[in-house]
Image (cartoon, rainbow, N blue to C red; front, top):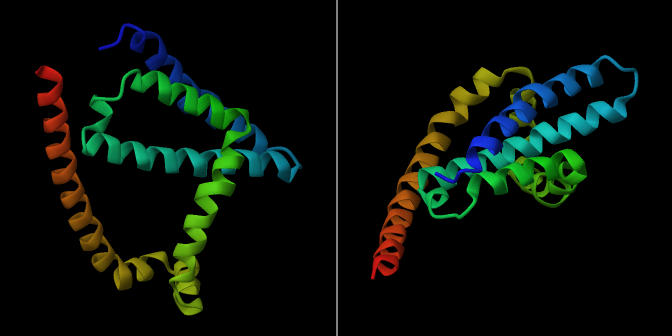
Amino acid sequence: MNPLDVLFGPALYGIVFLYAPFMSFRAINTPSPDDDKQWLTFWVSFSAVQAAESMLEITHLSDIIPFYLEIKFALVILLLAGGASKLYDVVVSPVFSLLESKFSEDDLKMLDENPSGFIKQHGARAYEKAKESAISLKGKATKKINEMKKKKDT
């Protein structure tokens, strides 16, 4: 464990679980839609970062990245300082636009009006595909990490 983790861990927790929700609450209670968009963009971008982080942790790649927590802290600060909008424009929006294009208008309407019906219709198949991909990716990553650790030890 990096000694700086003692500093960055609680600071990151405070930012993500106290500051950002409080500022989101304040934005909702103002008449301006601009701050609502800023905080919604932050949360969508932060969720995308969390999803990527989950893959790093599942594959144990986070274990071999030096200063991992410090990098995550800097990324959250970057998102708060306007980077969320850029990440949204460059990554999140194109990915979700592509995903959205894969569904019919009827399916999208069902997703809006009846999310549980949408999940019942599409969820099991998507879950199985995601599960198979994650298992395959984890196996490949574990093998690669073990190879890297052996090289490091020799």
